[in-house]
Structures are given as structure tokens and as C-alpha cells.
Length: 467
Image (cartoon, rainbow, N blue to C red; front, side, top):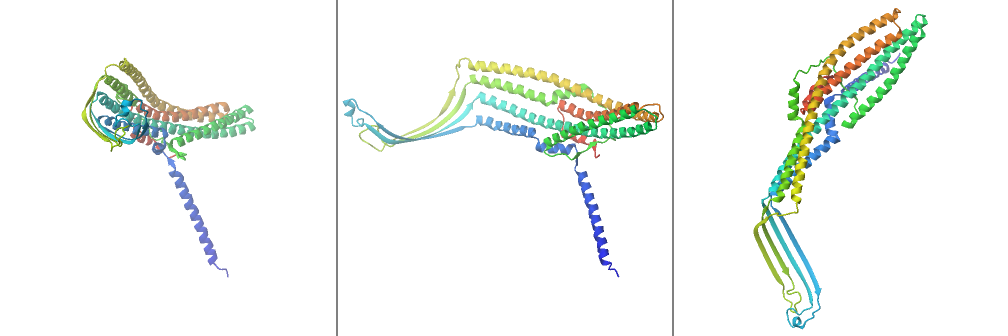
């Protein structure tokens, strides 16, 4: 009689292994799906890792310290000094008159001297310090705007590499699909050639096209690898998979007036606002240099003490030494009179530098207006392109179907089928590219206006979905 217990145990272990395998497969699938990342996740990682943004943040923190330095110009300054001297001197007396004086007849001096002093200085009037502080406030304002600009620049860089990565990945998918279609066409051509219905030229055309697609695929894979490394450079992590565009979501046409966007740019563009702060800094520098001609008034209090431990330096009679004390309280006025024209030259130099900054600002303003117009028109063109490429895609699909049918009936050759397929895949590629360009031009437009924010990335992120 066969014992059934080992058999039951074996079946139980087999079921347990199968269940463990299914559970492991489910966990791996879930893990692989959870590794899919989107635009916001990549941006958040880039904020924590990007060295360029970190550099600007540290620069901003350093600039904030200028406020404390500027305030210190109005506070009192205290200095102290301590001295100790050990004197060991010897002299030769040449006249008898000195040698007859008991107090001065000595020829050696060996004693110690101690002294200390403290000085407190409080500015009462310093026009230059006041103007320097105002200039520092403009510098800190400029630094804050540079930090905002760096944050917007990071949003742009992350978005650009994200959509370029999607385009590189889609290029590979399109080439794979095209390769599959060409392979099917090649099989059809060989079958018809073997049946004596077409010439060898049709087979060769399909074979050549297949080889060309394979070469293009190698280049596309290399491009995708480079884009992955660029994401790694921004975030510090190699991306596993990123979400693509949801093809169901539609795009909206931009209906705002261009002048509205230009007005917003003149008011909010960070590069223009930085130039405005640079003009304020240049004006402050002029006032600081003009202050070299103004008097300064300070209240001063000093106290000093001195001890000599040997009396008269060369006295024949030594005593316990001498002490001196001094306390001073007063007001010190410094009036610059003439510096050889140095102060006036410095003022003229600062005035010319301000004019240069103003011209730079005017040039930048014109460039910003041009950039806003360009991005606005590009966005409108992208919307029209999306509509046109969608129609072209529908038409090319019908063209491929009709050409393939005509090929099977002997009315078209293999070259015409391949051309129709190429038109189809070009339409698919151009449609995808126009979608990415639309989203990027939204970012470009808001960046040129100066209103690009994290909320804009969140809005664009809604266009993405799992593939």
C-alpha cells in the first residue's frame, strides 16, 4: 500500500512554490511599474541635486550677509591696545655739565614699561555709509531675483531634457513599428516574386529599406542613452522609465493678445528686473563716491594708562617709576579738501558705468519683447501643426491601406508601398514632436515673461500618463 502523506506533502510544497513565484512576479511587476517617474518627480530630485542651483543659493546666502555689514557702519566701533616694553639702553656722556647732574648723570637704563588704551568711536554723520547701506539693499534684491531666475532655469532644463527623452524613446518605437511593417512587406514581396508576379527589384527595395531602418535605430538608441545620462546629471539617479504624453488629452489654442504677454514681460521678466537693480546699484555707487567730498562726524571716547618701572631713563638715582593717565571725550570732524582730482574722476567713472548699464537694459528689453513674440507665435503654430498632423496621419493611414491593396492586385509596386509607409511614420513622428514642442513653448513663453512657476510644471504633468 502506497503511503499518501509524502505525496500530499509534495503537492503542498509544489503549490507553495507556485504561489511564491506568482507573488514574486506580482511584486516585481508592481515594483517595475512604481519605478515609472514623471516630470514633477524628476524636478524635485533635480532641486536637491543640481549644482548650478546650489551655487546660486549659496551666493544668495552670502549676499544676505551684506545687510549685517551695512548696518555695522552705523554702530560704534571699539578698539583696544596693550603694550609691554623692556628697555635696556646704554649711552656715553660727553659733557661734564650733564655728568654733574645727579638725575641725568647715569649712563644705563634698564626698566620695564606697561601701557594699555581703549577707544570707542560712534559715527554721528556719515553720508557715505548711508548710501552704501542703500546700495547693499539693492544688491540683496538683485541676488533674490538671480535665485528665482536659477529656479526657473532649472524648470526649463528639466522640462527640455524630459521631452527630448520622450522624443528619443518614441523615435525608437516608431522605427521598430516601421521595421515590422517593412518586414511584412518584404515577406509579401518575396512570396509574390517566387510566384513570378513581381521582379526582384521589389524585394531588393524592401531589403534595403529594412537595413536603413536598422541603422537609424542604432543612432536613436544612442541618443536615448545620452538623454538618460543628462537626466542622471540633473538628478543624480539614472531614470528607469518616464511617463509619456497621454494621447487622449487635447491641447488648447492660445487666445490671449500678444500685447498682454509683452506687458507682463516688461513688468515681470527676471532678467529685466535684475538690470533694473543693477541700475539702482550704479546710482548708489555714484552717491557713495560723491560722499568722498562730504565731511564725517564721529564721537570719540578714549582711555589710556602707562607705567614706567624705573624713573628717569638714565638717572643715577633709581625710584619706583612713574605713571600717566589720560581720558578723552570729544567729537572728531574730518573734512576732505583736495585729493588731486581723484574723487571727481571716480564720480565721472561711476556715471559712465550707469549709462552703460542703462543701455544694456534697453537692449535686453528689446530682446525680451522679441523673444516673447517668438514664443507666442511658436505656440500658435504648434497648435495649428497638431491639427494638421492629425489630419495628415488619418490620410496617410488610408493611403497605406489602399497602396498595399493595390500592390497585392499588381497595380502598385513595392517602392510605392514603402513610400506610403514612410509618409505614415513621418506623420506619426511629426505629430509627437509638435505635441512636445507645444508643451515646451508654454514653458518658453512663461520663462520669457518671467512668470514660470512650479504650478506650471504641475499643470503640464497632467498631460503625462503611464505607457
